[in-house]
Length: 331
Length: 274
Image (cartoon, rainbow over the protein chains, first blue to last red):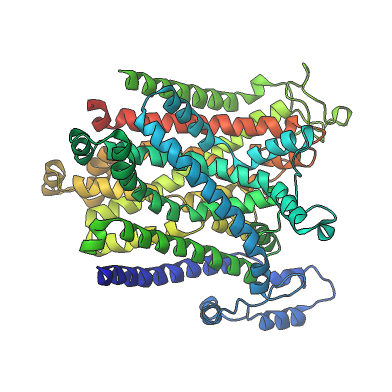
């Protein structure tokens, strides 16, 4: 059994390696295909810099080489976890810049994910059990609205309502003035107040999809013969639902979770820029605006890595949870 | 019977919104006397009134007129982007499904890679490096959203290519593209139609997010996203600038989603027979 899982994971790892190279080649190529170079800021925009200075700068950054050579150089450095230095402003190592912003983005995403799961599973199960009840109908309508509402607009409305008209929450930044002087609990309280609205927006935008998947999956399972059997042999509804149905209905949700990581990363860019939170999304946005190649590539690699890791984790969890895969070892 | 009613109710709602928005965008000049680009310094940041039903913005432009003309941009981006993605999806899906084997393997693995991509990251990077313009936005959204259609078309083609009418077309000496386009594709269209309808909604959302970040449709051309971006700076003193364009996005996306989802149920024979 374990051998099967190990085989599966190994094969998956190999495939993910291919995907990783595919993604980075694509991003590298697209970014370098674009007209203009990052040295433009220091050369064409600067009347003091001539052609010679420009060439020298391009040589420093290795921009004078053909794209495929640049890619191989870049890849060999990435493998050694050397992301290079940022080209704009402070010229600090890309990895340092990413490292200091990672915790915030990760914690917002993880807290939201927990909330989304905690709310969407009961909603989905209840909707499926009482299909076409008033609860199910209300939820269906809310889900459609949740799918259609732009996250940044919801954020603006909340800022307006809970930040300005009823000033319950601060509307931007991560900490208040005088944060340094606060005690430990004061700091926690301050952070929590700043993060409430962003986490809320994240949760609402993710909730719609997840509760819908949960409902569909549960409906599918409830139609199966083994549920009929379980009920026919007189098991109480409680144990049919929670022991037999829910377990199986959760399986597809695991995959969906893994697949939703790219969406979460994309969402971070928007939400962090609305709420002025110093996270990865904001860093990426600034890097893109400044055409900071190493920083943009570093972020793309990290995004791809997180996506693939989520993918792998979901796959692993899936094969642990589903005995059909665990035993046969194929899919 | 009750399910039936719900399905057609959704369809009617969706069709009503989609049709209404399209007509409003089409006949924008007839619905408002104002020019969405005309700056009026005597009417800066006015709240909604009889004269300006949705108020005016920081340059004194009529918000109602800008919302109407913004509908043109958003719908246009949605249609063209979906046109590109559907075309690409059909092309790759037909090839993969019809030929199978190595062609199928290569195309579908490429689809897997594209699906692993944090798409919004890529779109942002590409737009910023190519410089944001209407054409670039439509192309990039189209190029990053064809994978679902390709999978759908491939699955349909796989089963269709074994059917008798396709075999007999082949026996009659029909060329490859004639078989694919005349015999296979029409039978694979219903799910594609559904996914294209839902795709318009997704493209409109992506465009608005890009424009909101300043990387989409560039001012002074009005788009719902960039109106929200401009409104954000004056959120406290002119909230109407942040409310109405967002409401338009919500309603339009809702309309296309309702239409797409109900079409899925209506076109799916399995649901109908139950």
